[in-house]
Image (cartoon, rainbow, N blue to C red; front, side):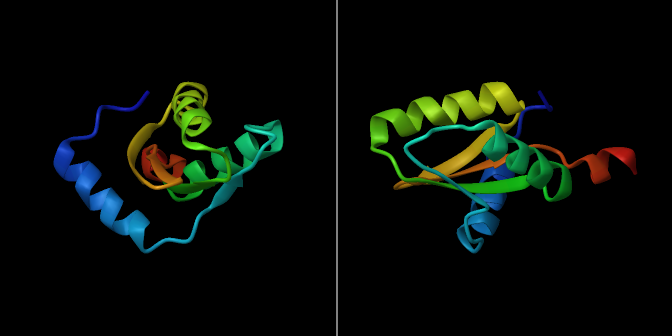
Length: 95
């Protein structure tokens, strides 16, 4: 995983994510390979991904943990059924 984000960094990213439209939407099928691949592309391109969950809260928290573990990212925050995640984009790493 990347270096851990500070609380100030997370606050800044939450502000940016608040104005974003969700990048992907997770439905009853959960985390499909196609959805994970789309999130990988978004992380590589933008770094910040906003996810809308169309499931109840209990499965949502489990799905958030699975996203963090499988995609090696960090959850920056959540409001209702929407969560945002961050990972340093590949473009920034290569510079």
